[in-house]
Image 1 (cartoon, rainbow, N blue to C red):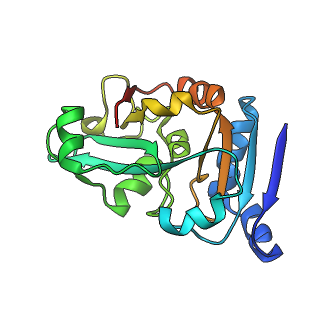
Image 2 (image 1 turned 90 degrees about the vertical axis):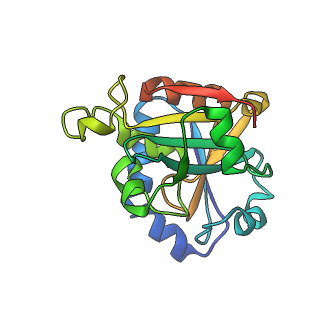
Length: 194
């Protein structure tokens, strides 16, 4: 079952229905039997702006950060509850992946198929079956470019929400469907303490 609501004028709704990134995510969810509810809104590139629109959405909202290692050959997506704070230094110590820095826009587009302000685990649909086309130096042993670290407190949530690779909408799925999504993606992920 699919639900759709809008917090913005009809022009935003019309724009979203023609948005390739959003449509690719929704098609992936539908083809894999993942139920979702989509909410449209004006572009929300920061958590501070998003909170105003998210207050009526019954789910745990997430902050999503995309990093690269110091060599630039490994990429990490970190997902955690949006009210939590996280320092890069603490993250580096926790993840034991070496020195981290934020990934560039070019890396976001190449690895997750999205732009800054729209980072989301749904971008991992662009990290499936890439071993033939991706730079082999960027691939983990499992054939994926991205490793996911996810806040273990999200396991306590009934529903979570993420941008569908575009910050003009938020998509809510159940915790069970999030786990199903991650299994379909097939990359390495780890539940961490944030």
